[in-house]
Image (cartoon, rainbow, N blue to C red; front, side, top):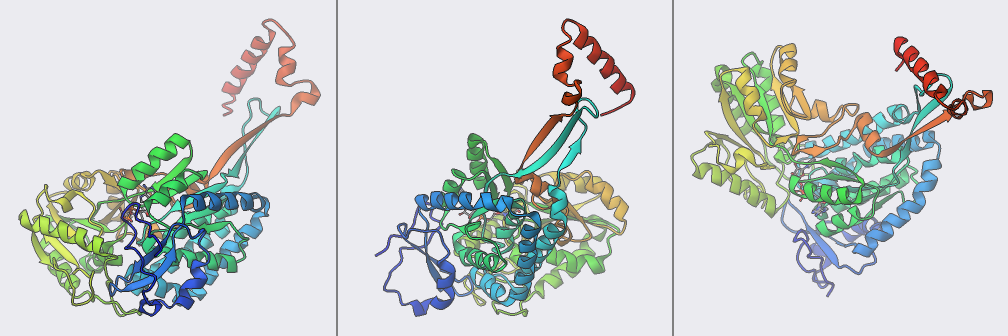
Length: 540
Ligand code: NAD
């Protein structure tokens, strides 16, 4: 019997090699071409993932050992040097093709995402759209982000300084299960653009989607070994941090702190995209016709398993009752389902562990006096891990779901008497990832946004217009993260910056050295005169 990897409890039971392959939801001829891409010596056992829709075995694949992680990074490092020398135009062409291929082959990955994560197809499509948007953005705008800059030298004309962006080398990416396509690529795209290689450690539950990305990247023309996949749980993620030149981590705040600690010791860069307890404020002047469906999407897209998802509703007391009446009705109408088509509004939770966490949060709140306006029940009639979209009122401050991230389809309601009180309630959290404000007066909402401690603030929308604007940085204040993904900021995080300063005047005998040959006080006097003149001319 092969030994399963049990290091952090994230991986499943020991695999029985006698288990007939036919019991797997995915046929071996779909799985094998993907799992062949894993960097593994087959010495660390096998992992079996489970279908969230049915609880049945989904696929089995080999796990990487710590030595395999070292091998993957070595191979990536060897390939990276050539990639960094590849003309930028060729690198952007690969990204452009990747975006086109993901759109073209979307039905393959939509099925895979749904089967691995249990989400509804419309939530899976958000990932396809996201990759197309991110690839287009970096293919078009990337060269500008990477362009050399001339900056003022010490002595104008005589000193020429240029600032260059160099790839860091091998970027490690550790991804969670909730967006198996998007979160595998959101850091990889700017990393590859900048001339880095990428080694990715996806979540054990959603590894096949990451392997599909590796296949499509190859089809898009990416040379070998520039995007490698290692598999396993937390120990393999931790091992990856030991070898790479930058770590891009997406996951929980608790794990992010460990990754940051080790990255700090190794003095490598770390981008940390962590948890949230995101608030949404409906102001007294909000248009409820647009707010109600928008807020439903903000809370329950991806079954609430979205880092930017709204878990705290802050309602101005003047509209609270009218809003809630319509909101609760709309939530009750949401259709749960496991079909591989667009019929369901909301999918399953990903696993028994997620179901346990969501149930524990709701039961704790109800036991402490909260009321469920809708939901609050396990929907085992739809599938083993389905949970009804839930709206909780009167949630006491000591309930777990008042402060901890639930990461499920559960939102709690707080009423406020003023915008000032709304800002105070929104900021009353250790997190600061995303916030949303609904108001007919966008200028007033912008003024409120300036007072909200959150990496993104979305006005009259829940999250999509911030997440899907890849020119804008995305990430967290406070315990929600460090650094940013998307935009110029991602490219800056994934590159080393190098200043090259050249003395132009040397041949004319007016270099810094020639000044010092004057001896005595003369150099200081000459520099004093020059510095005074530069100040008067207001040269930077
Ligand atoms: P998690 O932290 O348990 O796991 C995330 C990844 O880290 C997995 O691949 C896991 O195997 C790996 N890992 C676990 N322990 C590790 C260690 N010690 N060292 C290195 N890697 C390790 O998170 P999760 O529960 O799977 O994901 C949900 C969390 O992710 C939520 O908190 C959610 O808010 C957050 N998230 C954040 C963003 C964002 O952009 N801010 C996006 C999606 C999810």
